[in-house]
Length: 93
Image (cartoon, rainbow, N blue to C red):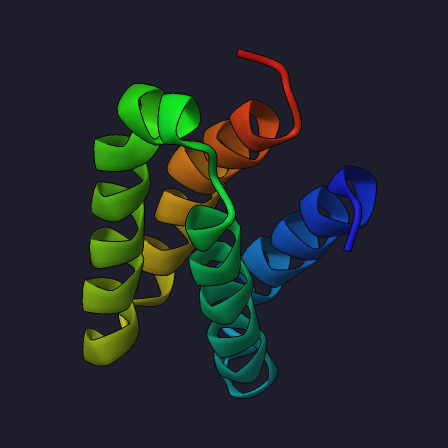
């Protein structure tokens, strides 16, 4: 998934979460979690030093909200932290 597709997916999932369409959004959150974990695993050593802790905090926050079924918590994490992580990952520090 390229940057634009990933950002569009994040935006679409957030809209579903904010509109209480959790049944569809939950499955897509699971897919995003897998994508983010794969992205973290492919970071270079330098990138890990710069963004590793932030990425781990993002994943932990998203997982915590996911486990609690906290729709607004998931949406907020995606809009605040995931968008920043995606921008960094694709070279916009």
